Image (tube, rainbow, N blue to C red; front, top):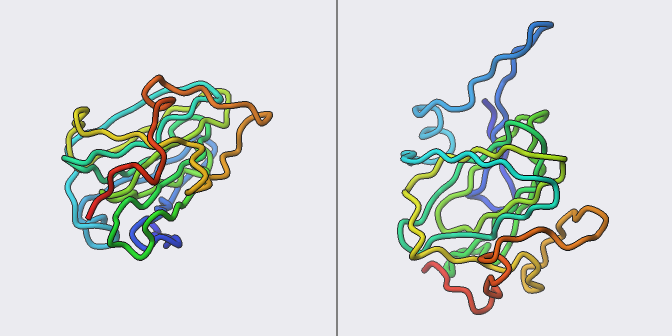
Amino acid sequence: MKVINTPLPDVKIIEPRVFGDERGFFMETFRQDWFKKNVADVDFVQENHSKSKQGILRGLHYQLRQAQGKLVRVTSGEVYDVAVDMRKSSLTFGKTYSVLLSAENKKQLWIPAGFAHGFYVTSEFAEFCYSCTDYYHPESEVAIRYDDPTIGINWPLINGEAPNLSAKDAEGLDFKSAPRFD
C-alpha cells in the first residue's frame, strides 16, 4: 500500500497495490501493523456500509464525544468525499480536502478524529464502507451545512441541482456556530 499526503497533514490517501489478470483482481485493503506504522496509531471498533443513489449527500458529520477517525472507501460506484478540520488549535482549522473515491480507483481516505466528513454520490449508485475508531454516539453528533459559504466546498452537483439530504443534514449548523474540538 502507498500513502499519499494531502494539504491537510493528518488526512491521508491510501492506494492499495492491485494484482489483476483476466480472472479479476486481489488487493489488501487493511493491515493493522502497517496502518499503525504508516498512517495513524489507532484501533478500529466499528465497520459501516451504506448504499446511496446518485445525488445523495451524506454529511458533513462529526461527534463531539467518542470522536471517530474513519478509514473510508467505495466498493461500487463513485463519490466525492470531503473532510473538514474542526480542531480549533490546528493550523488547518476550517480547511477542507476533497477527493473522488471509486470502486475503479480503489483509493481509501483516512480522516482522523476532529474532522467533519461527508460525501456526495456522483455515479448512479454507490456503496460506501468505513471503519471507525469509536462507536456511533448519536447524542453528540453534529451536522454542518454542506453549502456553508465559510468553508466553500465546491461540490460537483449533478446538473447543478441541490443534493438529496436527510432531514438532519438539511437542518445542519453553519460552520461559524458549529462546536469545535480544542
